[in-house]
Length: 314
Image 1: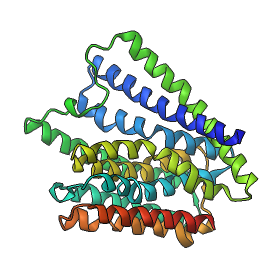
Image 2: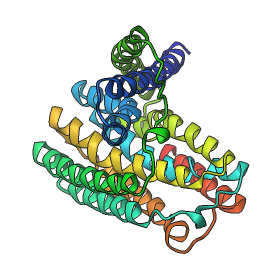
Image 3: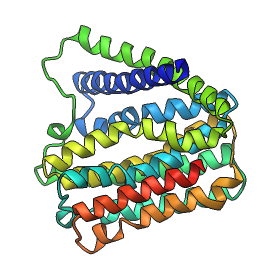
Image 4: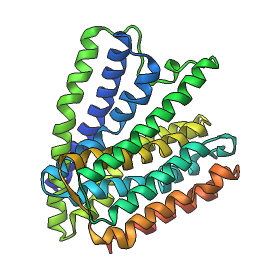
Protein backbone atom coordinates (compact mmCIF):
# COMPACT_ATOMS: atom_id res chain seq x y z
CA UNK A 1 0.00 0.00 0.00
CA UNK A 2 2.89 2.36 0.81
CA UNK A 3 4.28 2.01 -2.73
CA UNK A 4 0.91 3.01 -4.22
CA UNK A 5 0.72 6.07 -1.95
CA UNK A 6 4.27 7.14 -2.84
CA UNK A 7 3.46 6.62 -6.51
CA UNK A 8 0.32 8.76 -6.26
CA UNK A 9 2.25 11.44 -4.35
CA UNK A 10 5.00 11.41 -6.97
CA UNK A 11 2.44 11.78 -9.77
CA UNK A 12 0.68 14.69 -8.05
CA UNK A 13 4.01 16.47 -7.42
CA UNK A 14 5.04 15.83 -11.03
CA UNK A 15 1.85 17.27 -12.52
CA UNK A 16 1.75 20.30 -10.21
CA UNK A 17 5.45 21.02 -10.77
CA UNK A 18 5.04 20.80 -14.54
CA UNK A 19 2.15 23.26 -14.43
CA UNK A 20 4.11 25.63 -12.17
CA UNK A 21 7.14 25.54 -14.47
CA UNK A 22 5.01 26.38 -17.51
CA UNK A 23 3.35 29.34 -15.74
CA UNK A 24 6.65 30.71 -14.49
CA UNK A 25 8.54 30.21 -17.75
CA UNK A 26 5.79 31.68 -19.92
CA UNK A 27 5.47 34.84 -17.84
CA UNK A 28 9.26 35.23 -17.47
CA UNK A 29 9.78 34.87 -21.23
CA UNK A 30 7.10 37.43 -22.07
CA UNK A 31 8.46 39.83 -19.42
CA UNK A 32 11.98 39.77 -20.90
CA UNK A 33 10.64 40.34 -24.40
CA UNK A 34 10.56 36.89 -25.98
CA UNK A 35 7.59 36.87 -28.41
CA UNK A 36 4.52 34.87 -27.41
CA UNK A 37 4.90 32.96 -30.66
CA UNK A 38 8.31 31.56 -29.65
CA UNK A 39 7.04 30.84 -26.14
CA UNK A 40 4.06 28.86 -27.41
CA UNK A 41 6.16 26.77 -29.80
CA UNK A 42 8.99 25.97 -27.37
CA UNK A 43 8.54 26.64 -23.66
CA UNK A 44 4.89 25.58 -23.43
CA UNK A 45 5.48 22.49 -25.56
CA UNK A 46 8.47 21.37 -23.50
CA UNK A 47 6.88 22.35 -20.19
CA UNK A 48 3.62 20.46 -20.64
CA UNK A 49 5.59 17.32 -21.56
CA UNK A 50 8.04 17.78 -18.67
CA UNK A 51 6.52 14.92 -16.60
CA UNK A 52 6.98 12.39 -19.42
CA UNK A 53 10.45 13.76 -20.17
CA UNK A 54 11.68 13.60 -16.57
CA UNK A 55 10.27 10.09 -16.11
CA UNK A 56 11.94 8.83 -19.29
CA UNK A 57 15.34 10.40 -18.53
CA UNK A 58 15.27 9.17 -14.92
CA UNK A 59 14.23 5.67 -16.03
CA UNK A 60 17.05 5.51 -18.57
CA UNK A 61 19.63 6.63 -15.99
CA UNK A 62 18.28 4.28 -13.30
CA UNK A 63 18.63 1.23 -15.53
CA UNK A 64 14.92 0.63 -16.19
CA UNK A 65 14.64 1.80 -19.83
CA UNK A 66 11.50 -0.31 -20.34
CA UNK A 67 9.60 2.30 -18.32
CA UNK A 68 10.99 5.10 -20.51
CA UNK A 69 9.87 3.48 -23.77
CA UNK A 70 6.64 2.12 -22.28
CA UNK A 71 5.75 5.58 -20.99
CA UNK A 72 5.93 7.09 -24.49
CA UNK A 73 4.22 4.25 -26.38
CA UNK A 74 1.54 3.84 -23.69
CA UNK A 75 0.93 7.60 -23.45
CA UNK A 76 0.43 7.92 -27.19
CA UNK A 77 -2.05 5.04 -27.22
CA UNK A 78 -3.88 6.47 -24.19
CA UNK A 79 -3.96 9.96 -25.74
CA UNK A 80 -5.98 8.73 -28.71
CA UNK A 81 -8.17 6.00 -27.26
CA UNK A 82 -8.79 7.38 -23.76
CA UNK A 83 -8.05 11.11 -23.94
CA UNK A 84 -10.35 11.49 -26.96
CA UNK A 85 -12.74 8.70 -25.98
CA UNK A 86 -13.76 9.76 -22.46
CA UNK A 87 -14.49 13.44 -23.27
CA UNK A 88 -16.62 12.35 -26.25
CA UNK A 89 -18.84 10.46 -23.79
CA UNK A 90 -19.53 13.80 -22.08
CA UNK A 91 -20.06 15.96 -25.17
CA UNK A 92 -19.97 15.45 -28.93
CA UNK A 93 -16.71 16.81 -30.35
CA UNK A 94 -17.28 18.65 -33.63
CA UNK A 95 -14.01 17.60 -35.26
CA UNK A 96 -15.70 17.99 -38.66
CA UNK A 97 -15.08 21.73 -38.26
CA UNK A 98 -11.32 21.31 -37.69
CA UNK A 99 -8.52 21.32 -40.23
CA UNK A 100 -5.74 19.29 -38.64
CA UNK A 101 -4.67 17.39 -41.76
CA UNK A 102 -1.14 18.78 -41.90
CA UNK A 103 -0.28 18.20 -38.25
CA UNK A 104 -1.86 14.73 -38.42
CA UNK A 105 0.27 13.72 -41.42
CA UNK A 106 3.36 14.94 -39.54
CA UNK A 107 2.33 12.86 -36.51
CA UNK A 108 1.90 9.73 -38.66
CA UNK A 109 5.29 10.41 -40.24
CA UNK A 110 6.84 10.72 -36.78
CA UNK A 111 5.15 7.49 -35.68
CA UNK A 112 6.45 5.56 -38.71
CA UNK A 113 9.96 6.94 -38.14
CA UNK A 114 9.80 5.95 -34.47
CA UNK A 115 8.63 2.40 -35.26
CA UNK A 116 11.34 2.03 -37.92
CA UNK A 117 14.05 3.06 -35.43
CA UNK A 118 12.71 0.52 -32.93
CA UNK A 119 13.66 -2.28 -35.33
CA UNK A 120 17.33 -1.46 -34.80
CA UNK A 121 16.87 -2.87 -31.28
CA UNK A 122 18.10 0.16 -29.36
CA UNK A 123 17.74 3.92 -29.32
CA UNK A 124 21.28 5.33 -29.37
CA UNK A 125 22.77 8.81 -29.86
CA UNK A 126 22.35 8.30 -33.61
CA UNK A 127 18.61 7.62 -33.14
CA UNK A 128 18.49 10.69 -30.90
CA UNK A 129 19.95 12.94 -33.60
CA UNK A 130 17.46 11.61 -36.17
CA UNK A 131 14.47 12.17 -33.87
CA UNK A 132 15.60 15.63 -32.73
CA UNK A 133 16.30 16.65 -36.35
CA UNK A 134 12.73 15.65 -37.23
CA UNK A 135 11.47 17.63 -34.21
CA UNK A 136 13.42 20.69 -35.38
CA UNK A 137 11.76 20.44 -38.77
CA UNK A 138 8.31 20.23 -37.15
CA UNK A 139 9.02 23.26 -34.94
CA UNK A 140 10.29 25.32 -37.89
CA UNK A 141 7.14 24.44 -39.83
CA UNK A 142 4.95 25.37 -36.82
CA UNK A 143 6.86 28.63 -36.46
CA UNK A 144 6.12 29.55 -40.09
CA UNK A 145 2.44 28.67 -39.68
CA UNK A 146 2.19 30.76 -36.53
CA UNK A 147 3.82 33.75 -38.25
CA UNK A 148 1.26 33.44 -41.02
CA UNK A 149 -1.55 33.53 -38.42
CA UNK A 150 -0.06 36.64 -36.84
CA UNK A 151 0.29 38.29 -40.25
CA UNK A 152 -3.40 37.56 -40.76
CA UNK A 153 -4.18 39.54 -37.61
CA UNK A 154 -4.53 36.72 -35.06
CA UNK A 155 -3.03 37.22 -31.61
CA UNK A 156 -0.91 34.31 -30.39
CA UNK A 157 -0.60 35.60 -26.84
CA UNK A 158 -4.26 35.27 -26.00
CA UNK A 159 -4.02 31.53 -26.77
CA UNK A 160 -1.29 31.00 -24.17
CA UNK A 161 -2.45 29.52 -20.89
CA UNK A 162 -1.07 30.92 -17.66
CA UNK A 163 -0.36 34.43 -19.01
CA UNK A 164 -0.74 37.12 -16.35
CA UNK A 165 0.63 40.55 -17.33
CA UNK A 166 0.41 41.67 -13.68
CA UNK A 167 2.18 38.67 -12.12
CA UNK A 168 4.89 40.00 -9.72
CA UNK A 169 8.50 38.92 -10.17
CA UNK A 170 8.59 37.02 -6.87
CA UNK A 171 5.71 34.83 -8.02
CA UNK A 172 7.36 34.13 -11.38
CA UNK A 173 10.56 33.05 -9.60
CA UNK A 174 8.55 30.97 -7.13
CA UNK A 175 6.74 29.11 -9.92
CA UNK A 176 10.01 28.35 -11.71
CA UNK A 177 11.72 27.15 -8.51
CA UNK A 178 8.75 24.96 -7.58
CA UNK A 179 8.84 23.44 -11.04
CA UNK A 180 12.58 22.83 -11.07
CA UNK A 181 12.55 21.28 -7.60
CA UNK A 182 9.27 19.38 -7.93
CA UNK A 183 9.83 17.73 -11.31
CA UNK A 184 12.85 15.58 -10.38
CA UNK A 185 11.38 14.88 -6.93
CA UNK A 186 8.06 13.70 -8.36
CA UNK A 187 9.77 11.73 -11.14
CA UNK A 188 11.96 9.85 -8.66
CA UNK A 189 9.04 9.06 -6.35
CA UNK A 190 6.83 7.80 -9.18
CA UNK A 191 9.62 5.80 -10.80
CA UNK A 192 10.77 4.10 -7.61
CA UNK A 193 7.23 3.14 -6.64
CA UNK A 194 6.52 1.89 -10.18
CA UNK A 195 9.59 -0.37 -10.14
CA UNK A 196 8.67 -1.68 -6.68
CA UNK A 197 5.09 -2.42 -7.77
CA UNK A 198 6.36 -4.18 -10.90
CA UNK A 199 8.57 -6.45 -8.81
CA UNK A 200 5.84 -7.06 -6.23
CA UNK A 201 3.48 -8.40 -8.90
CA UNK A 202 6.28 -10.02 -10.92
CA UNK A 203 5.54 -8.00 -14.07
CA UNK A 204 8.03 -6.24 -16.33
CA UNK A 205 8.99 -2.60 -16.11
CA UNK A 206 7.80 -2.24 -19.71
CA UNK A 207 4.25 -3.21 -18.71
CA UNK A 208 4.30 -0.75 -15.81
CA UNK A 209 5.46 1.96 -18.22
CA UNK A 210 2.71 1.11 -20.72
CA UNK A 211 -0.04 1.17 -18.11
CA UNK A 212 0.42 2.84 -14.72
CA UNK A 213 3.08 5.42 -15.66
CA UNK A 214 1.65 6.17 -19.12
CA UNK A 215 -1.86 6.66 -17.78
CA UNK A 216 -0.61 8.92 -14.99
CA UNK A 217 1.44 11.17 -17.24
CA UNK A 218 -1.49 11.44 -19.71
CA UNK A 219 -3.71 13.04 -17.07
CA UNK A 220 -2.85 16.66 -18.08
CA UNK A 221 -3.86 15.92 -21.68
CA UNK A 222 -7.06 14.26 -20.45
CA UNK A 223 -7.98 17.27 -18.29
CA UNK A 224 -7.29 19.69 -21.17
CA UNK A 225 -9.34 17.64 -23.62
CA UNK A 226 -12.30 17.26 -21.25
CA UNK A 227 -12.46 21.04 -20.80
CA UNK A 228 -12.08 21.59 -24.56
CA UNK A 229 -14.92 19.15 -25.27
CA UNK A 230 -17.22 20.82 -22.74
CA UNK A 231 -16.41 24.23 -24.26
CA UNK A 232 -17.01 22.84 -27.77
CA UNK A 233 -13.39 23.54 -28.76
CA UNK A 234 -12.80 20.39 -30.79
CA UNK A 235 -9.81 21.93 -32.54
CA UNK A 236 -8.07 22.36 -29.17
CA UNK A 237 -8.89 18.78 -28.15
CA UNK A 238 -7.66 17.20 -31.38
CA UNK A 239 -4.67 19.52 -31.68
CA UNK A 240 -3.69 18.77 -28.07
CA UNK A 241 -3.59 15.02 -28.73
CA UNK A 242 -1.79 15.24 -32.08
CA UNK A 243 0.79 17.70 -30.76
CA UNK A 244 1.40 15.74 -27.57
CA UNK A 245 1.90 12.47 -29.46
CA UNK A 246 4.32 14.04 -31.91
CA UNK A 247 6.31 15.61 -29.08
CA UNK A 248 6.40 12.34 -27.12
CA UNK A 249 7.85 10.42 -30.05
CA UNK A 250 10.39 12.94 -31.28
CA UNK A 251 11.45 14.94 -28.22
CA UNK A 252 11.14 12.68 -25.21
CA UNK A 253 12.84 9.57 -26.59
CA UNK A 254 15.16 11.81 -28.61
CA UNK A 255 16.42 13.54 -25.46
CA UNK A 256 16.32 10.46 -23.21
CA UNK A 257 18.33 8.32 -25.66
CA UNK A 258 20.93 11.10 -25.85
CA UNK A 259 21.38 10.75 -22.08
CA UNK A 260 21.56 6.93 -22.10
CA UNK A 261 20.88 4.18 -24.68
CA UNK A 262 17.35 2.73 -24.53
CA UNK A 263 17.00 -0.91 -25.63
CA UNK A 264 13.73 -1.96 -27.26
CA UNK A 265 11.93 -4.89 -25.62
CA UNK A 266 10.94 -7.41 -28.37
CA UNK A 267 7.40 -7.33 -26.94
CA UNK A 268 7.05 -3.77 -28.26
CA UNK A 269 7.85 -4.95 -31.79
CA UNK A 270 5.31 -7.77 -31.57
CA UNK A 271 2.33 -5.86 -30.18
CA UNK A 272 2.48 -2.43 -28.51
CA UNK A 273 3.98 -0.39 -31.35
CA UNK A 274 1.35 -1.70 -33.76
CA UNK A 275 -1.45 -0.84 -31.32
CA UNK A 276 -0.04 2.68 -31.05
CA UNK A 277 0.16 2.99 -34.86
CA UNK A 278 -3.30 1.45 -35.31
CA UNK A 279 -4.79 3.85 -32.76
CA UNK A 280 -3.22 6.75 -34.66
CA UNK A 281 -4.81 5.56 -37.92
CA UNK A 282 -8.22 5.53 -36.21
CA UNK A 283 -8.14 9.32 -36.40
CA UNK A 284 -8.39 9.27 -40.22
CA UNK A 285 -12.24 9.63 -40.32
CA UNK A 286 -12.10 12.64 -37.99
CA UNK A 287 -9.20 14.34 -39.78
CA UNK A 288 -9.94 13.69 -43.47
CA UNK A 289 -13.64 12.84 -43.74
CA UNK A 290 -15.20 15.56 -41.54
CA UNK A 291 -16.58 13.07 -39.03
CA UNK A 292 -17.53 14.20 -35.50
CA UNK A 293 -16.40 12.21 -32.48
CA UNK A 294 -19.83 11.22 -31.19
CA UNK A 295 -20.68 9.43 -27.95
CA UNK A 296 -20.74 6.14 -29.89
CA UNK A 297 -17.22 6.78 -31.13
CA UNK A 298 -16.20 7.80 -27.61
CA UNK A 299 -17.54 4.53 -26.22
CA UNK A 300 -15.72 2.53 -28.90
CA UNK A 301 -12.40 4.29 -28.32
CA UNK A 302 -12.69 3.89 -24.53
CA UNK A 303 -13.54 0.18 -24.84
CA UNK A 304 -10.60 -0.36 -27.17
CA UNK A 305 -8.31 1.19 -24.55
CA UNK A 306 -9.70 -1.03 -21.80
CA UNK A 307 -9.21 -4.03 -24.07
CA UNK A 308 -5.62 -3.00 -24.74
CA UNK A 309 -4.81 -2.65 -21.03
CA UNK A 310 -6.33 -6.08 -20.32
CA UNK A 311 -4.29 -7.60 -23.17
CA UNK A 312 -1.08 -6.04 -21.80
CA UNK A 313 -1.68 -7.22 -18.23
CA UNK A 314 -2.72 -10.82 -18.89
